Length: 318
Image (cartoon, rainbow, N blue to C red; front, side):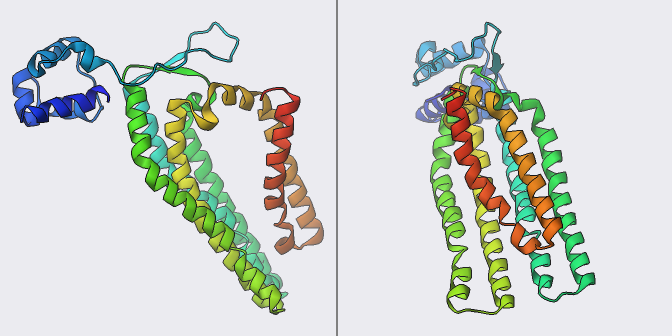
């Protein structure tokens, strides 16, 4: 339990309200509220007063019931690590929470963008296809705008995801509590998102088995994209928030070892997706079959996972 939880527990044991405790300490009720929400930490003088009022030791109040983080780093550097304060940690989690729906919606726009083109492709109408292409580009442009704007907003705290750091007192305990309370919602949403993505192919399979017309198959493809977009939207929302906790705890994909691996492979990642984009645009413009060339993206995503693993092994970053 962290300091915030201990203040709440001891205050309630004594039957005091926040106002009562504030009067005894000579502070405002808002100050007590901030301490209990882990939005701020009382100074040393107030901690001593709290210990006296509660009849406990300052050691009890200040010592988290968690193991000390391993301060070893895989980076061969003597440079001083960033120190993350409670305020900075709360700011980072708040910003990631605000960014989650924006990133999810921008990704959804990208997934749904080919739908107008699919719907008019069977009519062979040049004007309709032109409008559909303009709509596609407009949706992608809007999505890119959202990605860039959100990225710029998060950029001051981006080093947390890229470099090792140390946390100040209470930060790790606070984030662990938030992570644990979010776990049930995360697990349920993750399952829903994955199930939707799996079920998205069902309409297309049914249409194939029934030997449906091209237009019906197109409608089934549209249904597939809609289901995938909903599933991916859910996944991005919850994973963005969950990743903010993993980042501050330096767990999962954000351990010091993984950060080092990403630094060594970031050139490959950038070059890979640039090449995929070039192949997609070249193939699409050459064949004019945008409803078929879209398959490049899911195939590229599957291949990326395999090739990324191979690159990590070759570069000995595992």
